[in-house]
Length: 76
Image 1 (cartoon, helix red, strand yellow):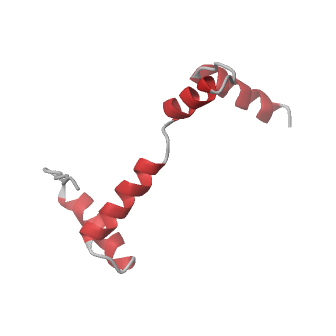
Image 2 (tube, rainbow, N blue to C red; image 1 turned 180 degrees about the horizontal axis):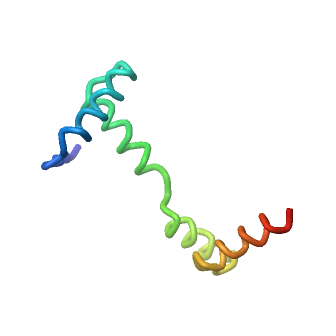
């Protein structure tokens, strides 16, 4: 396993994460490990588009998708 070290975190950010970890009954290290793992398991938007295109789906860019969502909302 690899280690990650984050430097220069503000006192406020550290306090928020420490408080959330305590509320979850976890150490700060355990809590951040879980959050990093969860985030790594979720594909980014770009990765999702790549998967869709790889499977032969439509090649849509961000602006086209935003426009489609707006049109759908406006039609209701």
